[in-house]
Image (cartoon, rainbow, N blue to C red; front, side, top):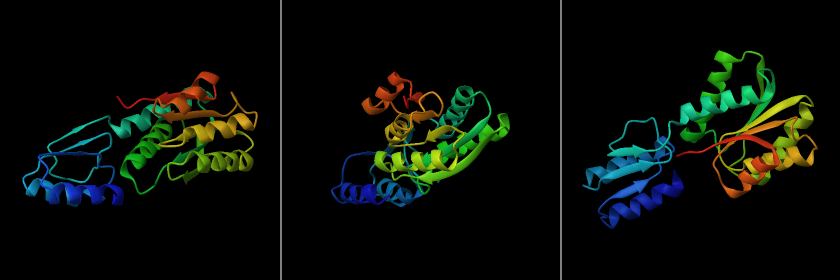
Amino acid sequence: ADDFSGGMEAAIAQEYDAIATIAGDAGLVTYIDRAVDAGIPVATFNSETAAPNKRLFFVGADLYKQGEAAGKAMADAIGGAGKVGVITGFFAVEAHELRRKGFEDYLTANNPDIEIVAQVENSDQGDIAYTQAQDMMTANPDLAGIYVTAGGPFGAAAAVEDAGKTGEVKVISFDFVDETMEYVQKGVISATIGQG
């Protein structure tokens, strides 16, 4: 929220005509409501907070359902059973938590033979995801999959590839950025989900 709250404060102080922002956590609600109270309409996009706020509208995907879709993709990729690890950007970011929770809830309800053995945060950094994926594979030699809820999936994919486990450890991720799509084309990332 800190990165965006400063921008929101500046936009309010400069009396913008309208503001469009992501609202990935409840920390921005104060600023959204302050802008609306000042007569500045606010639209949110990409990620939304579950906290009530005065925004005019939201444009984006249902993040919980994205998590469920990732759960189904993982279950399909690993044959409905096995150990998986979760790498999330930030536990404190609602958007990431919705994706993580949707994934977990889907697996609990539909695939009791899939066990989540690790859940870590990577600050949306590929290099951190690389190390975390290595650690997951070392701690769980029979690891079947890694789910990355937000930024840095190419780091996890690179770790899988470097470990010689392409096709053995399935990676499920989000977004169609170039680095991610390279690993999809190589078959290291089994599925990546777009936000359109």
